[in-house]
Length: 142
Image 1: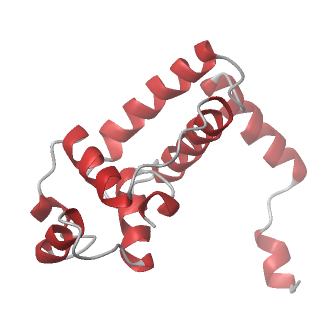
Image 2 (image 1 turned 90 degrees about the vertical axis):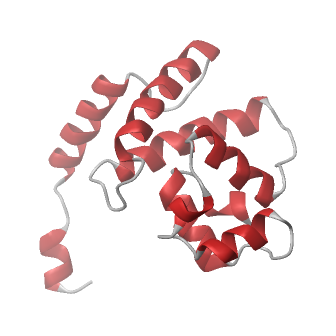
């Protein structure tokens, strides 16, 4: 590691302080019960409402982290097979009241149409953009 990289690393004390503040604010660092699950989902909904149409929003990282917590709990407790990627995209669009053209920051409208109709699979590049847009893992679209 170079000296420049070392200068940008936070101190252990700063990490402890930041993590402690996050845990105090959110209330959990790993979901262990249905009550905690509901709590984290409620916070995630607030963050999603705020970040919805703002790529690069300052809370984007929090959205991804909270989504990861929910996904981990879901995988552990509700081991359902994932829906097909096009169905997942359709569901997320319906939940957020989006039309195909609203996803122009992720892919052209005709490409979204082809994905939803099953004529085209979702590429890794588009999956990453959709994941950022919806605050989920890109794997949900692959």
